[in-house]
Amino acid sequence: MAVVTETVSFSADTLQRIQAELRTNGLGGWLLYDFHGLNTIASALLGLPALTRRYLVLLPAEGQPVALTHRIEQHPWAGWIGEQRVYLSWRELEAQLAEMLAGAGRLAMEYVPGDAVPYVDRVPAGVLEMVRAAGVEVVPSVDLVSAFHARWTPDGEASHRRASAAVQGTAHAAFRRIADAVRGGERLTEWDLREWICAELVRQGLTVGGDTIVAVNAHAANPHYAPSAEHSAEFHAGDLVLIDLWGKENPSAVYADQTWMGFVGDAVPTRIQQIWEAVRDARDAAVNHARTRWAAGQPVAGWELDDAARAVITTRGYGDAFIHRTGHSIDRELHGSGPNLDNLETRDTRLLIPGVGFSVEPGIYLPGDVGFRSEINVWMGPDGPEITTPEPQTEVLPILAEAPGR
Image (cartoon, rainbow, N blue to C red; front, side, top):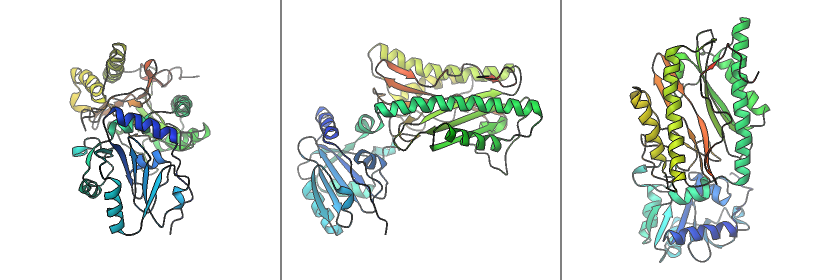
């Protein structure tokens, strides 16, 4: 039997801020559910690990929070600031839940109709049936998740900025490593460079979740390409190189996630430059759209930035080759639970509220030929959308020319 030693860490201050938001939105409360870590939003908000038994926590718009927990798993709830109800059998669970939710009205849960936002759609259909049977109207918690889970804390923001500098420096060092190998006639493969980058990220202090995609030429046309020791291309003069790398300092830190492009030569060929410009300009169009809206005092949603980027690539003739959303939320998870820049895979209507961060990474992928992506990170700061990636790439780096950072 698994033994859980961590205990809940949910503060009265957090409760008060959530309750104020609930009242503003006319909600009766926020109902959190988890089982075996299915809903990482609930566990992160409550400061709990994945528990082995179901629990439900009601954070009401007024009054004391209530936790409904299993009798076998009481230690994790030591120090809980609200009322605690205990169940043993499934019958007790259903009876206690019905009593706990009586008169609750409209409650937010991690549920999204039609699975429109998969990162927030965490509650099983059977649990929704049980909650609705208690007479409750369930509404999506997407805006609450953005405000209280996806927003960066000051410590998180600081950790992201440190990680951003480390990731950028590692990418440039990787290009220098390619240059040295090609000039010196040394055999260097995608896999070799991947292993070096992963070790370098750890050396730079990014000890959690660090990894990289290193892709040459046609391999870069697969957005999720992964080299292996057995199947990996060597670097040669004339190669196009994509390096996507990410990591963070510790479990509570915020990730940095960047993609850089280089060409193994002294000058970038015209065709490579032309396709790159479409990707770069699409990236910048998304950021500029967010900045324009901010300057006008108008809200902006993730799907709008996706449209702005996609319009540029479509106009340049590569619309069918842009096969993923423009960007994803970034928080303590690499692909976070906040707003995504997406009007392709889903229609993400969530607002990019102050405090959330995300990637901007349009791409063009031509199977059997080449692939391009440029990825920067943006934080909705107090002065508007801020690019947190140091010295964002404006041109494909000519790797055999004067190498970056040397």
